[in-house]
Amino acid sequence: MTDTPTLRRTRCCIAGGGPAGMMLGYLLARRGIEVVVLEKHADFLRDFRGDTLHPSTLEVIHQLGWLEEFLQLPHQRMERLQAEMGGREMTIADFTRLPTHCKFMAFMPQWDFLDFLQRKAAALPTFTLLMEAGVTGLRYDDQQRVIGVEAMTPQGALHIASDLVVGCDGRHSAVRTLAGLSSRSFGAPRDVLWLKIPKHTDDPAWATGHRGPRKNFIMIDRGDYWQCGVSIDKGTLPGLQQAGLPAFLHQVAASAPFDAARLASAITHWDQVKLLSIRIDRLDHWARPGLLCIGDAAHAMSPIGGVGVNLAIQDAVATANLLAAPLQRGVPTLRQLSRVQRRRTFPTKATQFLQVMMTRRSGSGKRPPAMIRALGRWLRHRPWLPFLFGRLIGVGFRQELPK
Image (tube, rainbow, N blue to C red; front, side, top):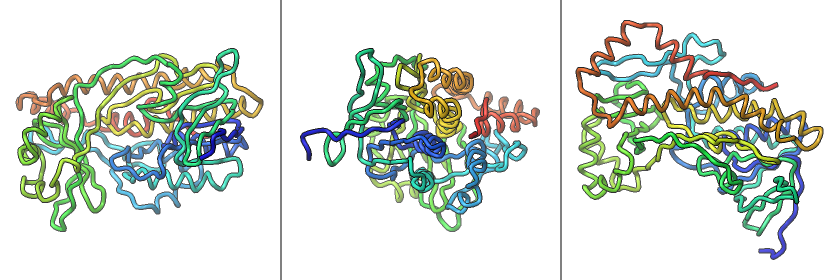
């Protein structure tokens, strides 16, 4: 460990090597802009991160000329989002008529997606990715403009001077906290518990989607296992743990297509049950002089619709489109940075509005069966709705394509 911080200079410093950070880093570097991406972990291997790639993200990959190569990676495809309502299987969203090259959602482990982006970016001479480099502070000039970051690496302290710092470090963003950016929370009464259930050779061809009349039981086909999500009231996990794992698995079996014995053979201790604490919030201002936040660092999303990764990618594309030229000329102004928020505010607000409404409607997850049957009949008599929902989920309220 060195006592004196290592000094480094770059045009743009991106905190966070997730989907937004890696995509933004590539898009800026391909325009000849020197970029350093800081990722606090040693690798991308973490379970139950956002693994859903919507048609909008696949369209970006197509525009970059990678689609055929990208789709060689292991993934599962879903053309329709299914749900069980009143004991009947229904199509909630249909992607087959979208004006995109890929008319399906792809499920791919996020580490494979990020490794793919890293390989593409590493071929560019102006791109640098530093792993195990966590941001610990921001650097300011005399006018309180952000002029870089302080980070800690295995080799010691690192100071990076840059014309722009971009926070892409997720819903628990260190950058937004260090910058003192205020936010508004919209609440979320539910959390999700994720489980892995190994596949059996005789499993039916269950559809990916939401199941269960009383609880939102989520199933995602991951190839050799089912990724399952159990919706619970926020803050109730300690009580479930106190009641014991067998009682919890019997509760899950009431909504799952698996019996309690199969669940018990797959889940033998609480460490195999991963909590996703749902947050829906949004920064009041995404930028201050010298700094910008995008993706989950600017707006945390509910997992409803799996839209978080795709909104982050759309933010990254918009950021590169709007700020590449100012960065090539010098230091972007606050007015130029704020154009990103103005561009992305409508799709962010509209998506969060729908998520909040759906969260409130779901309440405790205990709707009367008669209400569920009535809702199912209402949906069946409006065959155009799945295509509308397919558009809103698959493409969103504003599509961004790289220039």
